[in-house]
Image 1 (cartoon, rainbow, N blue to C red):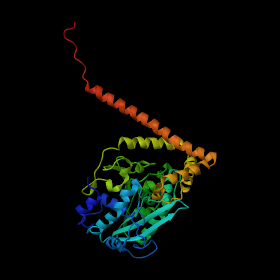
Image 2 (image 1 turned 180 degrees about the vertical axis):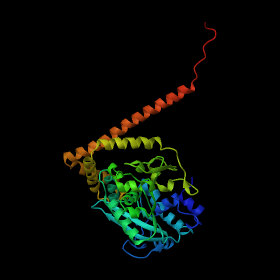
Image 3 (image 1 turned 90 degrees about the horizontal axis):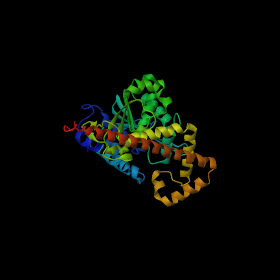
Image 4 (image 1 turned 135 degrees about the vertical axis):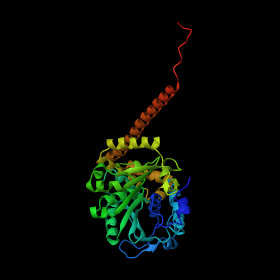
Length: 391
């Protein structure tokens, strides 16, 4: 059960000149982009760059402790990944530039990205995924009904600016929402800039509304896109995908497989799996059936109402939301009871619809499982030989 941290021990002494960028390097760049490089790496509108080793030496501790079970192990490992990269021949002297980190709570916008330059003619644009802020999580949910959320538009403008400033060719990639942003940005570049892209990596990030993948820009770039998803993926199976994808093994279970540090690595490749887990397939079917029953307008009303309830707690992050569970619950219940009846109805309808569809899909899945089991059992039972004593 080896991870990207073990990969650094295996191949850290090989420069990119000797061993070109591979799928595991892509994940490392994508995960490194979650680090807070503010005041360390030059911004988008500033010239110059710093080496990864210099950035690791200058970067301060995380601004707050992440206390949610879902994200604790991932964010806790970020400093270690940066430190190990800085100690390798492969990553230490890479140039970091064009850092941006923007959070707008009022607009439900969270966007962060950085460029890793392997040399003057080869660069990796890494888009960060959702952090601990509730603004980022709200923006993720808005992808289910908006053609473009603020971070997606920012990603396009960012890629355009970076490619105008730097010469050569590019990789684009990201983890979670960052993977979605990488694909979205690549799909909305000019044909000339798209030709400068070598590959686009979506590491367990959601897809898009159907009308987006039908657009000409998306179709022009789709052959360069690869999506990696763990066998029990949740985020990576959301919405529509048309690109090629690879199922990989994780040493975690369920939602925790989204943690990129749990993805198993062998050499310079991920350990592959043949198919998604039953739970992931059932969840995918349930979500698709649920979304088909909820209009885009109802999705929008649900997200606004849900976050109005959450905003009543005063929390700005998942960590803050989980700190005082009793006070949080009281604030949310009070806000819900004071809402207009129509808003309460929307919240109830969407939640009840999801559970109804989930139960329906689960019953169907259990039925298919029992039927399959019975068929396999019957095949193992050989027909009895006719009794020779009978005439």
